[in-house]
Image (cartoon, rainbow, N blue to C red; front, side, top):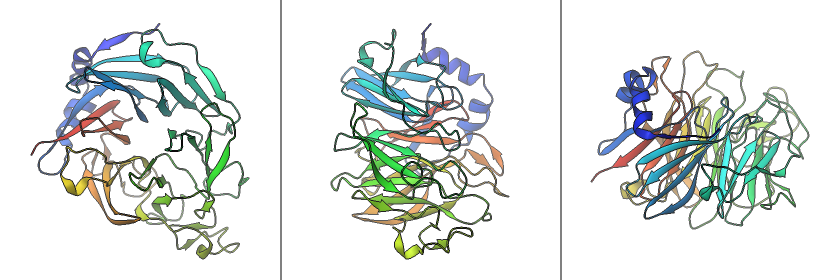
Length: 368
């Protein structure tokens, strides 16, 4: 049974939950002029996708990982969330969501599902159509961020089924693209250990994506990566080379780093860079426009934790020119108060931040 919960009730729940009110909401920090506030409470919120939008409001769809659910967050003309509705449950790692032509696509580990005409049937969701069930079913890096590119293709990453290994290069550690009906799948990029976020640069149309570096090379190696793939067929180094210039201890003697694409920007080591978006709005100051916002989920095996924030990479054309924190406070010393998992630009130019640890979606606004 599906049910919509008024957001006022959700906020009442949030205020009674210490992890949200007593810690996260009071600790979050953004630059001067910006504000951050709870927008909606969503269980284990991971990737977000913008659905229908009009003068009277619209919908944001939200996948999950541990919860196995997909939700719809409806908002009004003032961009205030008004209701959260569960539209699917019992799915296997339904992390990724993408919306196109009124239909919702959900990545559930080895399958892509489609919920037709979802915007008009949120309260009574249709049975899903299987777009494809031919993706690997390995649980290791089996969760998937998905999105439609400017070419109309659905892009689907398949992570390495390991920390580091030479798995089948036509099946793992890559980014696929396919037609919306699942036909004609092809490899777009190789040597990608585990991408959980990508977007296309306005103007150039080039694909940029985050990639999580391997573990067990120490606290400070290798860096996570922000990569640029303007054309199909490029190789980004895994498992032979990390960060553009670090040979893998096990596989690095087989091929040299010079053979592969270097990152557009090296990110922090083990920050677990996940969802990313180019800022296409006009609410934020001009220096942020065209920049990349990245949700850094945070390290899990580092001696001292790192990440647990939203960072920003300033971009000039094909080049990244700076990398710095933007929103922080989810990490207090080594105490985790939340974990950013995705970012999404709303039509008014405000920025949503999904937080799967606190079960929340935050909204960042700017007032001149």
